[in-house]
Amino acid sequence: QMHLVESGGGSVQAGESLRLSCAASGYSHMTNCIGWFRQAPGKEREGLGVIYRSGGSTSYADSVKDRFTISQADDKMTVYLQMNSLNSADTAMYYCAAGPTATCTMKFNSRIITGVDFDYWGRGTQVTVSS
Image (cartoon, rainbow, N blue to C red):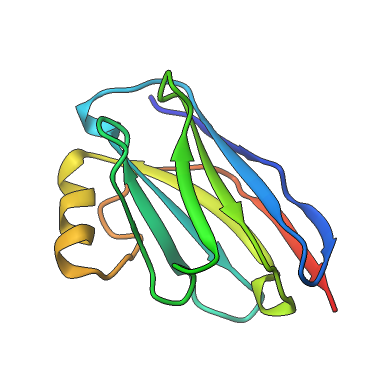
């Protein structure tokens, strides 16, 4: 059983930055893909980006690719989401999720990041941006 724990959320002013962390309890080919998502009240879940834990390659949603960066610790057990130039539209609950390598491959090929085929989800961390 894989466990994911997000942290690093909080309240910031518009224009500021935050780095979220996703701590994973394990690593295998079945959890080689980590995705970041967010959901604001009354809105659908939005996929932000994915990373292959094995090699570190990343892919992003067009809506955030110029401001958000996904990276990971050297031991691959923590994945980060660096968020810059935050604005009120970024206010949401942020989640990470894990799935097999094929999940990332599908997202890379389609360039569409959805929650489909992610098997494990964290409970989320809240980000609130004040203008």
